[in-house]
Length: 210
Length: 332
Image (tube, rainbow over all chains, first blue to last red; front, side, top):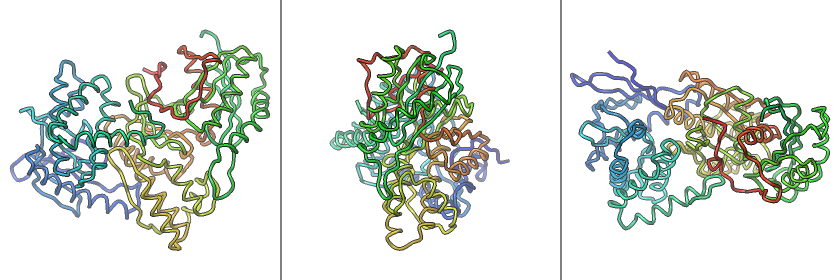
């Protein structure tokens, strides 16, 4: 019945059923490489935090998978099975709407940050495009709540780095439009956060930021 | 380039002055070095390190020549570490290389030290398209080759892993680099003391561990326990972000390069992670993990083969020269 769909970095995703509905199960398995003290803490804490912050995000009318069941002891979450290509795959196609997708991501991240939610892992593999063209944000394992500009800056720096490294050919157009979408929500604090992103990048080893 | 030629590579970015002779097929004919050791409890003093390099350079060059059993007329090109690194140290290597280039009338090639670590690790381990974890005193980065450059997929947001280990080592009264002794001490403990675990996406932050580990030492915890806890926490973080990058990039080879690649505990953790994922782990041989002339010589050869050289009058060193600024023409 259960079939492994993906072995992610920290969890295994399998297809399953929640009563009659098709669903996925995300289990954070034990990692042999790290001591049990660290392992227990990470698996249980991240599972609870993930479910908690996903629910909070949902209340902001941001598209996230619906959670059906959480089992902290087993580090498992059963949630909606979201179907569609990830932004990562979408960006490697030809003739795509880079402007629109960049703006939508920016708008979404702006809404998160305005409400002091930090996703913590904004990569292009953690966003799924639904059939209705909504972007569904997944994987809140590293998410937390914070009103610090530094934390919001780190979130953006990560996405910028991934766009630049993995999608270099469309980096500029996607990121410029991301900023436009982000600014439309963040308004007055936009400039301040962007200057913090630059500061964070400058802390990188041997960095020179244009 | 049609026939085989020899390259002399000169490394001088930080504490190590290294000289290596390699042929253009990738054989290392000689690789010799001398490492500046600061007094116990203190770090690299730029003036003292550069003085060390100035004093040891002539003998090391002669030794590299003798070990390779060649004469100066056999040398085809001279490669030097142009950055990133400590200014006064970089200038010693560059000055020596310029002099050799002028005297022997041979092309001069500037090499990025970090690219040197990765390319030598690729050559010696035979890996083709890895997710690379570059861990040393100067770097803590996850790289993968994509569209013409070694791109950065994750890195430290503050200290490098080498700095973290050395700073705690120095605080405990050891001399830098302190990796070997800290690992030795860590082996004697199984008592895990809680330290902050900070992973941000594919990035890590070590500054919290530094502060907390110092406090643990101040509160009379045993150095063995602190070393063990520091190592377990920091290496778990590095293993986690490497796995994250591996999953994102959907690749199957991991490479560890840089001085901290000599750590057997880090290798053990990454190996366990790779086995569970069905990926392969490749590690640069211990001998070529730390800074050495061969990393410069080999990257010099790759650069020269793709048309890179610089005239002595235009040659430079750059203290800040990030590896994702370098165009890599020899990889597709």
